[in-house]
Every structure is written in C-alpha cells, then in structure tokens.
Length: 223
Image 1 (tube, rainbow, N blue to C red):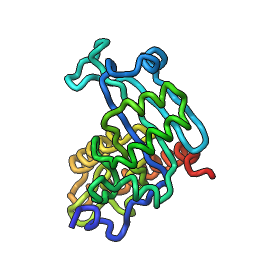
Image 2 (image 1 turned 180 degrees about the vertical axis):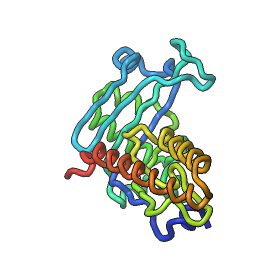
Image 3 (image 1 turned 30 degrees about the vertical axis):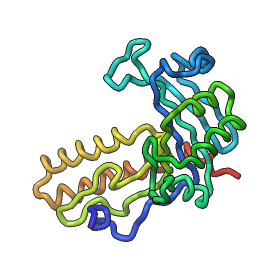
Image 4 (image 1 turned 90 degrees about the horizontal axis):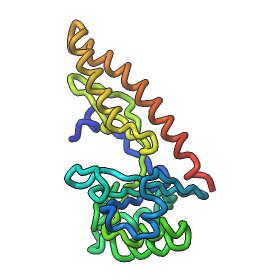
C-alpha cells in the first residue's frame, strides 16, 4: 500500500481534460527559421483550448553558453479521455496511466502530433514539433488529499497535492511541505501535535495552489 492510499484511501487523481506534449533538444538542432524567431525569447502562442510555449534551458552538462543550451517546448492540447487512452498506449500496446517517456510514443501518436502541429501552430512552432526526435507527454491531473497525516505517516509534495504545471510551484510546494514539517517537529511538544499542526497548515496552502492552477488552466476546458 502506498502512503497516499494509507493516509487518504479511495481518492484518485482526476484528469483535467488536457495534456502537455513536450520536446527538449540542443539549440544547435533547432530549425534555422525557428531559431531566428524564438531563440533568446520566452515565447507563447495561445489559441482556443491550446497553448504552446518555449524557452532555453541549460544543456545536458549544465552549460549555459550559446551553443551549449537546449530548447524546451511545451504544447498543451485538450484531449478527450478516449484520445488520452490512445496517446498513453505504446507501440507494443502497453497502456500507461499518466505519462509517456521520451521515445515511447507510438508511431500513430507521433504522426498525429506532427500533422496537428502543421495545421494548428505557426510554422516556427510546427517545425520544432516536426524536428523533435523524442517527444514525450504528461496528462494533466488534479488531486487534493483530504488529509495529509494519519498516525505517524505524513504526505508531502505530489503525494498530497497534484497541481497544474502552470503554477510552476511543484518543487517549491514540496520544499514548503518539508520545511513546515521540520519546523512543526522542532517546535511542537509531541509528534502527534506536530503532525496535526503540519496537516492544518499545509492543507490550506496546498488547496490555494491547486485552486490557482485550475484557474490558470480553465481555458483548456472551454468548449
């Protein structure tokens, strides 16, 4: 039994209605047209129930000089649950629950992704999608634990709250949980008291972050 099921049995993450296709490649492999337009900019493309964004990140060895970096793009797309099931099925027929790693998308999904990019995105973005050899995907889910503590077991990070990636708070939320738990244990008179205080504080914070994420992602659910 996982810790989440022990602390808050029966609750499951709920699909939010859209996914994030992603690509990450060395900037030197970007198509020239895309590089000339996008490089050095944090870029967005917004349309009905979709969003594309991209930005530079450090290279695989941590390099940040021109020519050493990688370009990261994210394409949010609304998919039905039936479409999601196809996307999360590998070439061999293996079904995943939440995501597909780089290189594991089926050929049919890869082709659909490229074709949709060509018809739905500006050319500079479509070229990036077409040129990405190993796109990957994560489905977007919501989850809020009704309790973060049971006995001497405490939930932290995504075990307690799965929030939308638009908040850019996944790491800081988990760090906040850990810091708060440390402080509660140091200051309370007993472990049960510390865990009860931790649960009270972080459930409020987690709910606020989750609510903010749903607000940011609301446009993807609009028909």
